[in-house]
Image (cartoon, rainbow, N blue to C red):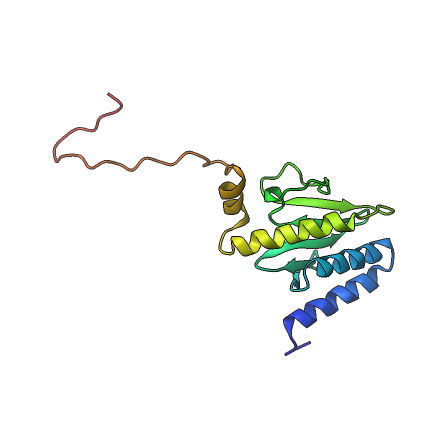
Length: 174
């Protein structure tokens, strides 16, 4: 694949992964991929996060990551990078619900995918990316949905020291 188009290479890797799975997970990933492209033909396929312990992950992007298509023993997981900022009136999100940024849909063997609702969710994710192109998912969440940053420094900025007059003694809260 040396010298080939990275998009074509990623698509070929995804094709190979679907074929390699050869079971309901491959069929489900192929179906989800078809729905994603039907929802927005301009979505680009990528293959990311290859590590010695992982072959990598199919990623679907437009203006940023829209979603991933991970395969596990018992599920095909679609993780939406900015899922917490998306409206989900059909209740498709059923995994990673406690997170501040991402949301996921776990599809198990025999599950029926609500294609119309999934297309709407994909289109909303693309619109969010295109309307906030330079923001991280957490920045979009904070700005757009009232979410807050969580973590050890949340809301705890250190005050800047004020200059003292030469020869004066420091005040300790007096």
